[in-house]
Image (cartoon, rainbow, N blue to C red; front, side):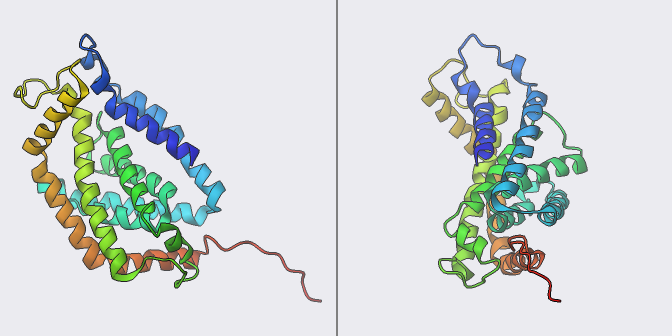
Length: 271
């Protein structure tokens, strides 16, 4: 989890540093630093994958499944094209993070956003931030209560302590709604400090106290993105509750049949 903590720390700094910048700092000079962030993010993502494989014992079959899910997520994203916040990929990311765990969930979210950016031509300074934000969404799903029990239940469906059935769907639906709104909020923080010409009540003021700028940021989110964030949350909840049982069952069946967690044993041959 050290690599996962490190890449998350880099993301927090990347999103939040303008809030602590002095009034005489040149924010515009750093607005195009995203390629450097991506260069730092890529080896850390690889580190997360390697660390997760080492800790959990997942093999090439798990990585292949990760690639399939990332491709599915990338294919789902253009269906809504962000129209009014209709983004069906969120429910798949949440459910996959729940089954695969926080480490692989983080990588799945990041890789899915990278692949969808290539697919839709959405490559730009915002892409590394989208990768981080979606990685956090999937990671959070893997850290929800009962996640460890759910992981053990891949091999033992009735494992003690597992949160399953309607309770799990409600939990994932509530988390999906919250994470959908938080994703939009975090992505607003990525671009808001660099936008000029805004009304005084919602514009970022370099050097002002953090509390004052956060108050303006909340007003900015309410005025600009809430109309997209709330529909995204509704779509995620509806899809999680309606398609969630089938998707969770398919994901757990796939991991069980692939025997990701089955230990390798050697027995003497009979002669």
